[in-house]
Amino acid sequence: EGSVVVRRPDHLAAQLKTSKGARKIGFDGKQLTIVDLAAGTHSTATAAGDIDRAVSGIQSIYGVTPPVAELLVNRPKAHLLTGVKTGKHVGTESIGGVVCDHLAFEQDGLSWQLWVATGDKLPRRISFAYPNGEGGAPLTATATLSQWKLDAPVSDAELSVKAPSGSRALE
Image (tube, rainbow, N blue to C red; front, side):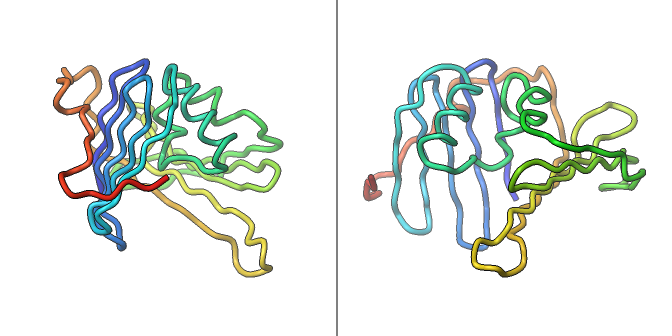
């Protein structure tokens, strides 16, 4: 559960509550900051440019994609469809009471699904299934999206992610 605030092209802040505790993620056009409040740790990495370049850089350097980054980049359609081998319309389903087109995609080493509202065309759910290199069941990640507020004013304070006093820096 969480919230994300984006000021395109180069700022975002996310607050997440997971089964492992609360986390904050921020990007200010120069640096990515991740704070693990439960562990009392934080880390920063250089990630200059717009959100798209930062996400691509993090993927290539660290081999991970920040949560729902595919939908936060400046050009989500281009980012999502890069490397897609096949895609299909699965049908329509209700997500949180909103009728959505259910789409499924395959690319090398990844299958993913996207549910897009038929009315406002906003994503309502995204799910990824990564093959398990140890031969087990695929590793999955799913995010359900609601309460979209497009073109809402965003303050600098809402975009500020700083490590709390006493937090231990990790490389």
